[in-house]
Length: 396
Image 1 (cartoon, rainbow, N blue to C red):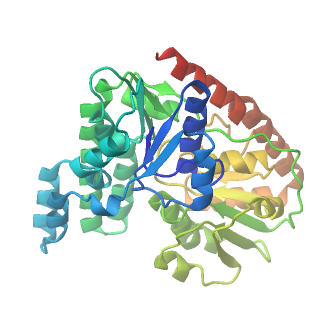
Image 2: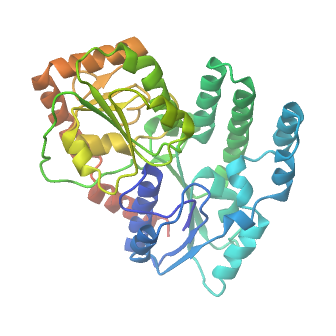
Image 3: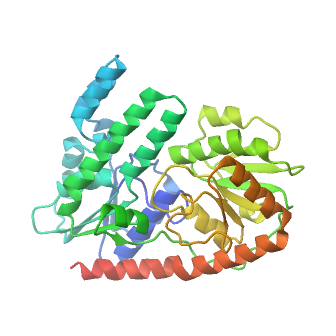
């Protein structure tokens, strides 16, 4: 298994999905795990959990494998010339550390090991995974989400903010992801995504949803005025979500004593500045999210860019926290506005939905119960892992 971050059982959404795949594979095979950490840091705790499922765990030094061509491109001073050179380069920047040097390192750590199946997670790991085969293996790939769509949405947001240079670069990243997927996906025997929306857009792919562990009946001790956002703030769609909420939604809210807690690591300076206002608390990384969910009146997901599905909404539902989300934030989960949660896509409607939810405690409880039951039925981790293990078994 080739992964761009260390698989975990609890943590950020992508790493949790990696853990889901690792556990499913380990039920059927002896698994060697190679982590090329281009999308997440490796922690000792995460490594210990992965080692409980993998026969061997190897971590590549991706700082030493950066494509020298891209390194030269990034040194070009003129923005237009740099963008033109990147367009000719033709690969997403995330794939630029997974080069021939990385492939040689993978061959070194797998020397003497014979593989029946090679699995990669995320599109930017696809080329490296394919380079490791000798024609006898079955290949599988988890795209998780549609990266082209993610970067296109981020480019549109940059353009709305007048950041034309950043927008142009993200459009090039989106094009590069599109080209990469078209070139590599047909070479895999099975390809998964997390969302039916992405499966339909990309065509012919298998949906394996994100999942969440069943939990005891949640303890609730909210005060009726605490909003919660949970997510890694180094992930740009999450950064944009919080920035949009603070600038466009928060000023519209009129409930006295309202608080917003933002829980997640890697907040950029922009968010740290924006959070210096009354009622807003930037918590940072939390080892245990349960106290934050227990104390939350509402969980918010003001997501305007991204693809796949949001594991943190599944977490909120399992913990019995009512949810206010954009349509995109809840995409692929099958939850209905008015039944499981509140959906709103403009700043005015998002604020109105929050005020409506805060003013009706019984309605909050009703929708939270419905969401929890829905998640237990469709996204229970034990069931999802069992189905995924059976899919892996069917490949050989």
